[in-house]
Length: 320
Image (cartoon, rainbow, N blue to C red):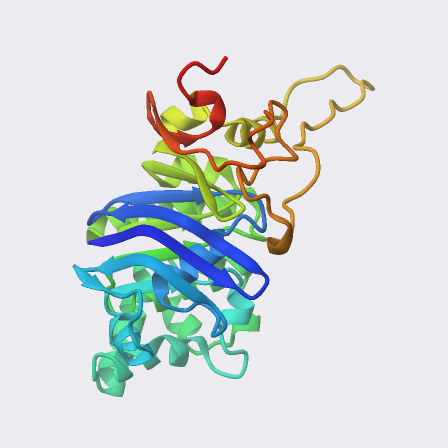
C-alpha cells in the first residue's frame, strides 16, 4: 500500500533523511522511534507530501502503486485525508482556536466528501462517539481551549479519521499527556486500526507506547534507519548500540529504601548533532560507546539480525 525505497530528504542545512526504506501493508502498525532531531517528524511529513518547500526528495515513494516522489501539490491534496491522514504533534497548534471543534471536524467532510452541513454534523457526532469523547454533542459546540488535553487529542484523531483514510500517521500523539491518558490514546489508536483495517505509523520517543501500539519497529538516528524488526524482539534483544542506549535510558520505577538516593538515569552521552555536522559514515559516530575507526568515515550497510536488520560495522562478518 505504501512503499518508501531509499527515500532521502535534503534541506539547505543537510540531509534530514538518508536512504530510508519503509513498507506498510493494510492494517499494519509500525512504530518509529528516536531522539528529537533523529528525523521522525520529517519522515512523517515526507509520507504526507508535506516536506518544506526548500526540501529536495530523492529515492522513491509509492502510495497505492503510484509514484509520489515528485508529485505536485494538487496530486497530494487529492490523497490527503481520503487515503492518508496525519495526527499532528500539538493539538492546540493543529486546532484553530477561533473555530468550534465541531466546525473544524466537519470541514473535510464537506470539502472532500461533499456532505451537507446536516450530514457532516451527524458524521462528526458519530466520530466523537467513536473516539470516546464524553458528551459528544456538547464537545461539537466547544472551542479547543475548553477541552482537556486528552479531549483535544481525541478531537484531533476524529479530524484525521473524518474521511476514512487507509493510512494514519500519528506524530507524537501522546506528548504532554499524563501516563493514564496516554495509555488510553494508544489503546484507542490500536482499536481504530483493527476495527477499520487502517495502517498506522506511530511516531514517538516513548518506547513503552510504541511497544503497546505497534507490531514492527523502525529506529531512526540522524536521518538513518539504524535498526528495524518485530517490536518485541528488537526491544528484548537490540543489536545496534543506539537502540541499546535508548532502551537503557528508559525510566524504570524500582523499590528503594527510605532516604536512599534515587539511582541515576542512564543517558546516551552528548546529543544529536545538527544536520550540517552529521558524520559521513555512521550517524551515531562520536556518541557510540563501541565506536571503531571506520565508523565516522564509512556508512555501515544494513545486515540481517535474528529479528530484522541493523546497520552497524560490528555486525560485519569477522567483526568482534
